[in-house]
Amino acid sequence: MSTEFTPTARRLGLYSAIVTALLIVVYAVTLVVGLMSLKSPDDPIGDPMFSILEILIIAMMPAMVALMAAVHAWAPTRLKTLSLVAPVFMGLVAGVTCTLHFIIFTVSHQPAIAGQSWAPLLFAFKWPSVAYAVDITAWDIFFPLSVLFATLVFSGTRLADWIRWSMIVSGVLAFAGLSGVALSNMQFRNIGIVGYVVVFLVSDVLLAFFFQQAQTQSA
Image 1 (tube, one colour):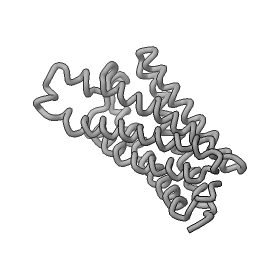
Image 2: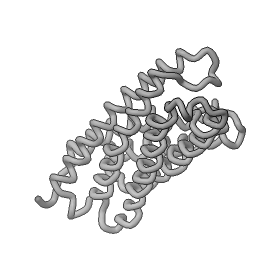
Image 3: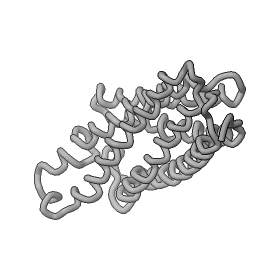
Image 4: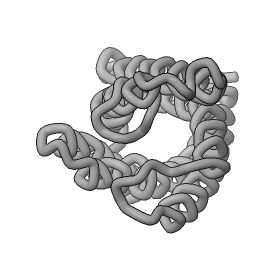
């Protein structure tokens, strides 16, 4: 543990883990409802579920960045250089995905744009599209890099080992979602969704317990 791990860092880790976990649960429920409403698995999720998902993703990102910042604060000095990569890449996830989803939420529904023949190529979550490619960059490249570097922090206790392995699984599955691009079949991208929604939820819950039990070194 870092000698600089303070009560403020502990609270940041605890609260951000709880908020992230709660938002992931709401996101997962909304996603399942949206997917169940589709007539074809190849169809994109429609409103109002799609707009709710957009808002949830944007709301989730500050907490996820804060969580990785707390993980970096916990890291021992010898691992600080490596652990710093985790919040940097999570910051990239936040910047890319918040920008993307805010543009889709506010701009893509405008009548002057929505009726254009080229609009689906930019904004639709149906492969291939620019929006889909940008989203994949955030969640199937930047996200797994963040969580895999974060795994280097955790060792020495059973809870830390569970966190490390759950985050490894989360990152590997997120990377595996790139197979959807390689195969031009977005059904395979669902592998990545399992990684950064289902498995990362487990990591979040474990991190909440971890920071709740963590000991601080200075005020």
